[in-house]
Length: 414
Ligand SMILES: [Zn+2]
Figure (cartoon, rainbow, N blue to C red):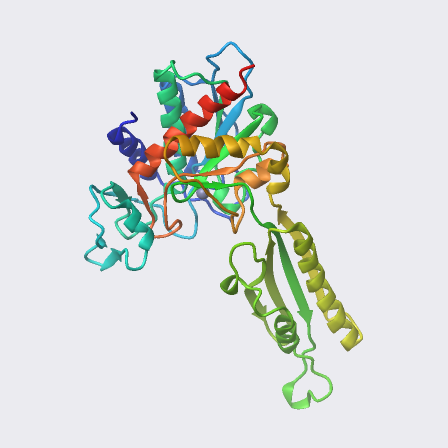
């Protein structure tokens, strides 16, 4: 068995190191402080007996657990990220450990009256009797994704200590800057050298994901004409009114707050405007590639229509693809999802297979040639003060990693 105390100790040692990333920075890692944890992880990987431990100039960490069987087994990988989101502070994390959770409110911070309540976060109730790690209400926790790192390292350590469990070659990869969308872009897939991998970066126990959004960003710029308001008749063109017309012409119910499951959307997330010029910033999301392309066309067409109404180019639009649905890359190698599912079933975990309404490092890695579904790491309420993780879920995730390694070696025995 994997020891609970050991998992807690390891997890706490990671979350108490501040690794907040910064989207305004151009370096990789985006913040120098990410090196603090990265260097510690390198030492730890060496200490538990991993081979070929490397860290490159951008703080990407890789390590190998050699095969302990004589037959050929595909090389598999496990990936997670050590940065935390810039959306909420990750400095001075002070984790609180609540043993034998009683199903009632958890007081995170009495002074500031911050409460983690199952009335609001009803997921909590499924962890009654378990050990729950929370914040003190003033920071995020960083289970996203230091839970994933804890699980991967603990699984490698367990496999090293239990050579009776047979497995092929396993590669481990830890990245900076996932939270600002740059976890995968400098990941050396060739050097990693795995046939496929899993990000340990999902939320609740059982999650297994191999579908995500296709994603694009659109910037719509509307040019008006500024004239003195007292002398404006027939001359002034107010870009903000045209912007409003544009916004209202897009399907009003195809927005994040009205969609779920496989429904895509247009999301207007910023407006900056004055009479002379207005800028609308959108993201476009859809699981279906055809619908995704159609959404981009709708935005362009609408701009064209308004332009022809005015008889000149008042609206210009720049659309840029951001990432794509990994389903396209994973479906041809569906056994990699099946193995993860079977591992969960064998461990008594109910697999929750669903489409991600977002992206993961894995979706980018899949398009870079490393098919990479996502597995639960156990945490909830990421990116804020209510983040928590049940220790039992981290133990289960650790077991899932070991089981996937074992099943991969078994299945490929000829
Ligand atoms: Zn994450």
